[in-house]
Length: 540
Image 1 (cartoon, rainbow, N blue to C red):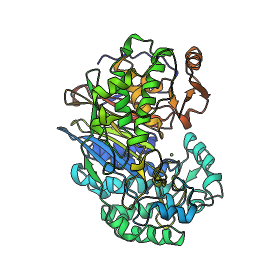
Image 2 (cartoon, rainbow, N blue to C red):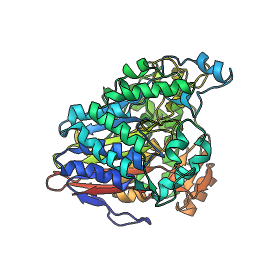
Image 3 (cartoon, rainbow, N blue to C red):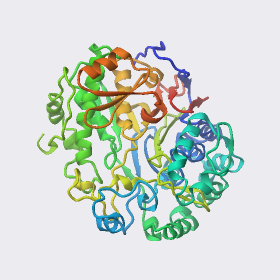
Image 4 (cartoon, rainbow, N blue to C red):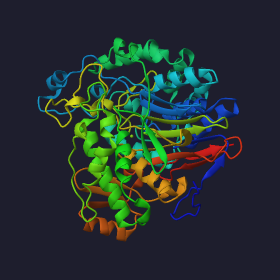
């Protein structure tokens, strides 16, 4: 691939070239990963250290109680890891209807009844055991140091912290942990989280077992019961992450890989499978037609994803059926280039997140994502060990007559997940590890940035800097303020209900990209980090 290295968009970032790279949404986390490489570790060691550190430096998006997914190239083949946790054994539709009323259609967004078994710590341990080089305890050292000594709160993190405070300050453990002055920290103010240092030490000493079987597990269950939750020691002890085979879609001579359901990564694959039926490159890159076509393909993808994707053990259709080329050709024919449409699901049977990536000079590449879901997640923080917990339970339905019956809550079931790492190959060889965080923006970001690189030859940093749109529902569409005004007006004229949003930190996600330039020992990698976050790509 020959990239255009001009800078067509205003940006504070330039591509980074190095043989060993870590790219994250916070500089201290990227540097934590790089420390492991300098110490003799590989890309997996770097990714784990960065993931642990970023639970401290970006608590507005993830914590020690997050879920996680990973796709990694070990130098010879691709592996996927699903570390999303299941519902507690007590959870049924009746459980929620008794507590919250017979008309509720989802578990609550916040509090203990939004918390499924957290999987991130199990992901770190599983990755380290199978692919890491350094002792697991070494990987926790940078995070422990940050938790104890503190760090100066950066701009984007502070904005999200302050915005979340009114919503979450009354939830168990939140104020004690994240409002040490009775308010959110100011920009540049020193924040320490010594409880999390205690938790990280226990995780380090036991290779994560304390979280699921030991002292942290006991503290979590005690705190849950004190505040009306249903989590038990058995729920935690029986959990194991699962190694999975990524699903894939060919596009312009490359292959995009995603984690299979229960996640939404298949949405990006469906959209690209639809776009494969069009000559996108002949359309102006930031013009009306190119953007309209991509939007409509994404809408078609989401229509099927929201109807069918759930815990794969319960799905009515298979990923293979949803990605069948003949089915996607039929879906592509639904697109009208002269008007926007509100698509419904087809019938395939017949036809707050952080993302980070690392790569080393021996060819190992890691695409990793972990999240508390809605900002600080559930808002619940176990105060003894600093465990900030996700709210993935909100992804379940409690309505048997809902849009997707396969996603009805049940004991031990995995909820619908939004977080998705991505990986690109060509002819079975690694090309790029990347991701774009941010709720349902993630598959949209995967598609938009990849189209820019593969159809238009934009380099990863330019593709990252470019203006984005975000489809919400129905005809609703958000557009970044720096999108071309003529394109925005043209999309409106086609029937899209476009709202221009000035705050890119909230609505349009943020990406990290590492593109392999050739032999890593010689040509190395190209990395990009999204200007919509406080992040950085670092390397040597």
